[in-house]
Image 1 (cartoon, one colour):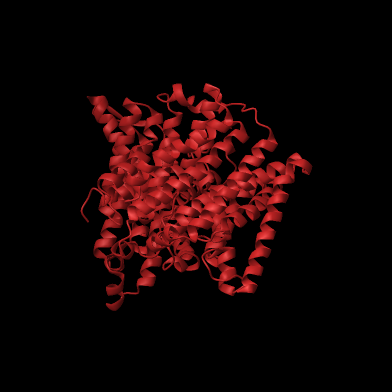
Image 2: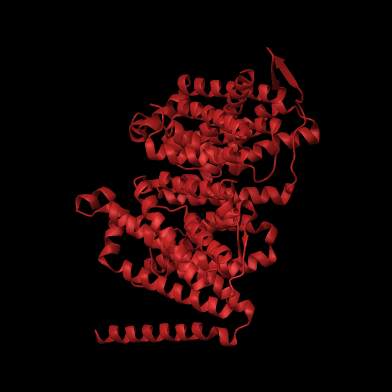
Length: 283
Length: 316
C-alpha cells in the first residue's frame, strides 16, 4: 500500500511538469489557433539553458526558471510577430508543417552545436524521507516549482487586465476586437506565454532527467495527449490532463513495463478522440 | 479545336518518349542512377498517394508512414518467414493495409482538421511501439527487425516501381478530372455544403483514403524489399510521412503532376544535401519547409497556374 501511494505521488509529481508543457500548448492552440509542433523543442532549449547556466557560471538551476520565463517569453513573441502571425488566416495544415519545420530546424541545430551527448544538472541529489515514504529531492522541488508557476498562470489569466484580454480573445476574437481589445497583441503575448511555459518546464525537467537534443519529441506527444484529454484551449483541463498522464505513466511503468508506458500518450489520444472528442472536462 | 488536338498529340508524344526512355534505363544506366531513379519513383507514389487523399479532401494525413510501414511489414514478413514470392507478397501487403484502412477510415475520418492529423500520428506512433513490444515479437520479431533477401534483381524492381508510379499518376489524373474528384474537392472547400448537396461525404472520404493506402502501401512493400530490411523505428519513421508531404507541397498540393515533379526535384536536393551536409541535413530540411509555407504555399504547379504559364484546369 505504501508502495502504491508512493507511485501515485510520483505520478502526480511527473504530471505537474507535463501539465506545464501541455498548458502552454493548449493556450497557444486555443487563443492563437496555431498547433505548435515545435513546442517540445522549447522544452529542450529551456533544459539546455539551465544546463549551460549551471555548468558555465554555476548559476543556481532553481533560479534558471526565473531567467527562462522572460527570455522565452520575448523569444516567443518575436517568433510570432516575425513568422507565425502570417499563418493566422492560412489553412491549419500550413501551421502544422511550418512548426514541424521549426522543430527539426531547432533540434538539428542543437545537435550541431551541443552534440548528442546526454547531459544532466547534478544539483539536487538525494531524497527526502516523508512518513515512511521516500521522494527524490529534485522531483519534490520540481513539483512545487511547477505548482507555483501553474498558480501564477491561473492568477494572471483570471485577474490581470492582460489575462482578461487573452481570455476574451480566446472566447470570441471578433467581439473582443469590437470591445477595443488589441487581439493581435493578445495573440503575440499568448504565443510568448506558451513558449515561456515550455521553457520553464524545460528548466524544471533539467533537474531530474537527462538532456539531449531530441528530447522534445516525447514531451510534445505527451502535451498533445494532455490537450486532447483536457479539451482544446482548456487550461484547467490541461492541468488535470497532465496529472492524469503522469499518474498513468507512473503506474504503467511500475506494474507493467516501461515500453508500454510509452504507448500511453498515443493510446490516450486515439481513445479520447473516438469516445469524447471534446475532452473530459467542461470549459 | 484543331490546335488543341495538335497540342494533345504533342503531349502524348512527349509522354510516350519519356516512358520509352524510362523503360529502357536498365539497359544502359549505372547502378547509382538506377537506385536514384528507384527512390524518385517510390517517392512519386508516396507523394501522389498522399495528395490523392489529402490534397483533394483537405484532410491532412499525418500517418502516411502507417500505410507504408504496415504494408512493408506484412510483405517483408511474408517474404522472410513464409518464403512468399515477392510479386505475390507486395499486393498482399497493400491489400492488407487497404482493408484495415476501411475500418480506420470509418472511425477516424469523423474527426476533423488538426485532430485528424494528430490521431493519425498517434496511430502511427502507437503501432510502432506495439510492433516493438514483446507481445507481438513472435510475429514481428520485435525491435530486432526483419532482415531478408527477396532475390529480386535491381532491374525487375525498377520496372515494378516504374509501372506502379505510372499507374498512380494515371489514377490521380483520372480521379482529379472525374466527378468523384469534384466531389472530393467539394468536401475540401466546404464539407457541410457538400453534404447538403447530397454527397455521401463519409463514403467518398473512405474510398479516397483506402485508395491512397493501397497505392502507398504497394510502394512501401517495394521500398522495404529494396532495402532488404524493416524494423519498427525504420518502418514507421515520421520521415516517411513528412518527406512526401514536402514533395507534394513543393510541386503543388491538389495538382495531378505536382507531387511527381516535387518528388523528382526533392530527391536530387536530398541527394546533394545528404552527401555534402549530412550533419545539418535536418536543419536545412526544416528551413526549406518554413520558407515553402511562408513564401511558396501554392507549390510549383500552383504558382505556374497563377502566373498563366499553365492553364488553370484540374487536369494538370
